[in-house]
Length: 227
Ligand code: E4P
Image (tube, rainbow, N blue to C red; front, side, top):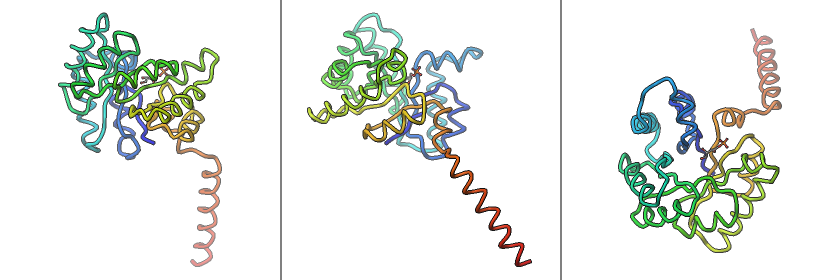
């Protein structure tokens, strides 16, 4: 399963990219705002900076950049083309609305890869696949905020995409915990995007720490006996 970092923060990307675990970056307008309130960089500049940082580590990454001109199909198509023309690593992120999916149909036909975002139901996910989306992003955490199981939805989308042989990938999004990532892995979804706080926790297990301490202590004892 490919892991993506869900962020607009350049320092966060720099701090994890060398691990080799991150296949790309997903952003959204909220994440961009959060990390760039005190600078005056344009959206394009931020995207170019992320791309340049990513390129230092690997060339086979993607960067999801969301359209913000969403009042009509034409607006979405026009901004989608503009974003895609910035760099070939960019995936155009389009909200799962009627206008959004109509735009995805055109953009996908033109060979522009689209990440259909803000997916909260199976029927929405099927429409996204039928529109030709490169991937769909079901928002697991936000579904759970409403008291439903986001993991069940992931499972239903996975099964339905397999049943119909849809080629659209599933990108589990809005993941809030290691348990979410664990469940997404078990389901065999293609990709998961996570904040840095969750990425850091993926490495951790208390038994590993206890084991490392014990081995170090025993090795010291072994060496000391030979001095
Ligand atoms: C996905 O592409 C979104 O950027 C993201 O996962 C949203 O997560 P949140 O619900 O924690 O804001």
